[in-house]
Image (cartoon, rainbow, N blue to C red; front, side, top):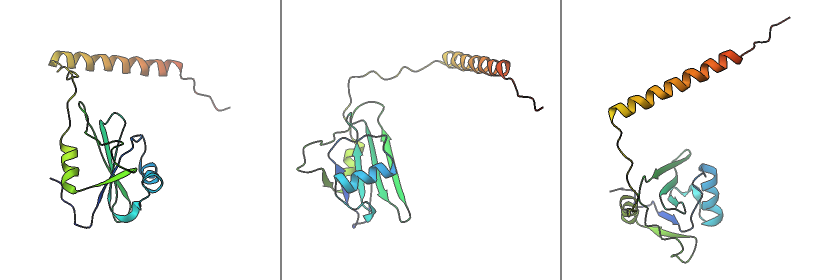
Length: 146
């Protein structure tokens, strides 16, 4: 369970966001789309269209901080388009429930590799690295100072 001071509010952006955005981009979403003050110390929660990534932006005394999470399988139950505006307010308990539960999709889990397969991939990567270094040395022509 996540615990916050009573003065901290949690705002969820109900519009899917581009998760390539970082501090400035998310702050711009807070001020322009959600029309809230990003420096107030509240938590601002964003998710992408696929609902498998979440970022939380907040002001931490001397600068912005971002917490992010990517699900390897499944999606978050984000309420896109259900709220009346561009954001809705959540309680700390609702945020905790939102981040800890997700529905699983019918996508297979990645296969576990055997120790031999791992060694084989490491050897292959070493060989590729050796060839690249050899090519770089072979084609390198230093310019001689005259």
